Image (cartoon, rainbow, N blue to C red; front, side, top):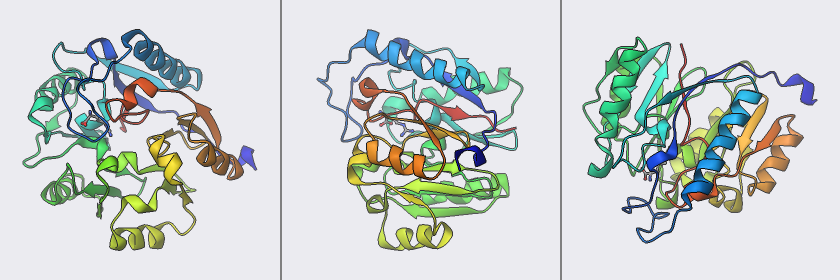
Length: 273
Ligand code: ARG
């Protein structure tokens, strides 16, 4: 069974947590007085990078900027599909300056960047399934941005409403297991409005459903290459369910980043050319 899952090599964009800290609170996980163990955070992040490289993935890095402690969460800065880059416009003023630095990286790497007109937090809320985009709204990215994203990429965008502030970005409540032939997702139903839950159940009748414990452990903030799932070790039930389906969980602990409301996927943007 597990041999039927075929990985696809990915290109990831990341940002080293050199200036990572919790200095403001823009989601329920953040406490401005939280102590972040900076050395541990760096070690955890390095472990994620080694795991990606060991599994054959390419990693590009953006230079971190002093005074932008959340810049490590590369997923929020753009969504890239078919080599087209849709940039970010952050909800929180504290994060707005990050976009320019990511845009600069994309331009130097040879990409043109589309600047959004309304709030849009990249892959935090825009998830490419291989066929269309699932798009979260409710806390950060707006419905206007969903329309703009559809117009820009020419791929269908399916809007989903998030209802629990702990799962303020779509990528804290859902991830794609396979964006190829075996197209499927894992998600935490309670994070979504009743209508959005129904939409997900119709689109993915065979989805892997996560428990509240899995979700609280940031188990849905995972990255899958189609076979290996880079996942928080605390999401035990989810990892077991994935193993049953033939996926191979690769546990990586980013506990220090949870203090900022982030995990594995938040630290990882995928460049799809
Ligand atoms: N502190 C950051 C924020 O609230 C965390 C971002 C996490 N990123 C993600 N893709 N969910 O914006």
